Amino acid sequence: MSARILDGKAIALEIRKEIADEVQALKSSRGVQPCLAAILVGEDPASQVYVRNKELACEKAGIQSQLFRLPTATTTEELLSLLQRLNEDPKIHGILVQLPLPKQIDERLVLDAVIPSKDVDAFAPENVGLLSQGRPRYLPCTPHGVFQILGRCQISVAGKHVVVVGRSDIVGKPLVSMFLQRTGPFGADNANATVTCCHSQSSDLAGITRQADILVVAVGRANFITADMIKPGAVVIDVGINRVEDKIVGDVEYQGAALVASAITPVPGGVGPLTIAMLLRNTLTSAQSS
Ligand code: NDP
Image (cartoon, rainbow, N blue to C red; front, side):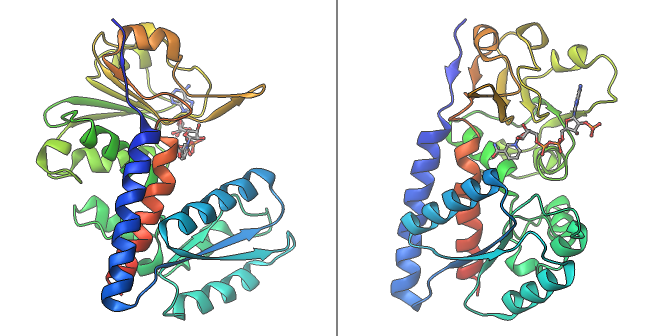
């Protein structure tokens, strides 16, 4: 078997085009331009690249972006005071705090200080709670990207056994929450799964992953899932992004997995490009409801 390749890059471009059209319509009808504020503390090179990519994506979609660069020695109090200003500014629709933050900053306190209506990453407890109750204000960006790939590729989720490997607050847990809902971004067929979540303490991981109709992997270990851990014909979604020497690889050993799976996301070019697209979507949603 040779798997169908789920082209996240093409899907992200399609979504970004839809967003650009909606941004234009919002400007024409109400004179509102969505604006995303990004806060970057310190000099972490990877964070600088991520923030730059987000700025460029905003620009292409007609979304304004404001970057707040703060020195590495910034205190929690200084960051909280900037957040308060941004929370109160009606021209700002989304606030993004680029992680990781320097050690001296209380990350929990800072993330909790973003007002939920501008929390376009959907990390705030209120937004996590709304999602788990099936009435999301914003869908978390990377998990939403996974659902966009499944929905736009006409891969049905309802009634399937979905195995999610990883239980982080950013990826694994919100994915589980979304797969369990009665309706997804593309309706009932894009939700209603039977869900198993695995983590580092799970016994017989391979025995569980081999039961998956849809296997979603977010572990952060290069080539961790091998072909023998995948049920023939399963759909494999690889969220992992790992640098191995000068290459980016996923959490799934792609060459072997592609021979067993019926469909698979590549890395790079799979889930990755969707994350920024869904951040733009949330910023637009916030502006539309302002
Ligand atoms: P975390 O490190 O926060 O979580 C990793 C999860 O994997 C944990 O729940 C951990 O279990 C689990 N895990 C670790 N080792 C094992 C093991 N041996 N067996 C089973 N489970 C294991 O990572 P993230 O969720 O933030 O990210 C995961 C990957 O996704 C990374 O490669 C990251 O770069 C990528 N990523 C990609 C994004 C994108 O845009 N495509 C966005 C965000 C992340 P435990 O909880 O028990 O420790």
